[in-house]
Length: 278
Image 1 (tube, helix red, strand yellow):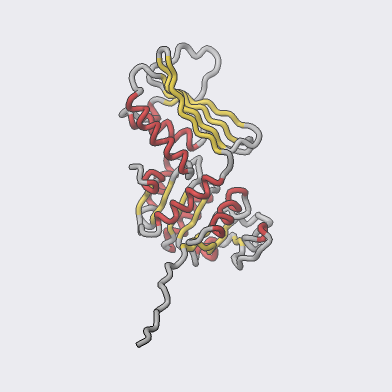
Image 2 (cartoon, rainbow, N blue to C red):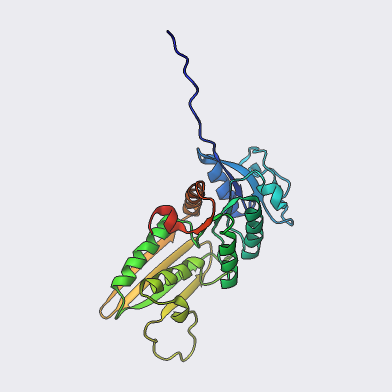
């Protein structure tokens, strides 16, 4: 007796929409989605004033995807499972409102949110699943874990300074990653960053106040992102540094976050959750 084999079951590919589709990060995300085996581009968003609106989302690659770049949020999200967003706070919140309405999950790499805006994101996470992190790089998030460990061991007697450098087009300072580093250190030591942060030093500042966490910002050229945290004690200094040579790490981390959300319906998550570091 000759049997007939049934076709192998295939897992549907994750349908991904990208915000800021004509920007540098947006294009890298679109290229990464196309190169993946388990994701497919399902939407591309941009502001109405963008000259790219109406064009094919992969035209910059010299190929056609059949996905047009649109400023119509509902049209751009209607076929998506998850949105990846690296835009600006106001735009991200507008996108997230529609995601919550349509049941689309969201990976948010946008930085520069106020405390009130972060509370809005948390409220939307009660309606859909959200991964929200100031940096999607796997390496950066492993660095954050190392800082958590160092902060617990290097508490008393060590001053903390955070130095970050980014390209000249970055509009917020300190970077979201630098702030997250400060938050991780403060929390690991049982304190709050808001009670310890020093963002400016000029003129006669007086001696360094014990327990503060200092920030220094560098902007110039095309620096993708560099962060160094110094734990400075008597006779020694421990430095933890992460340098990004390209934005590829952000795209790969974003896709890992999107895959993580595939099995979640609601809730607020970060990259520690995605990477199993919590």
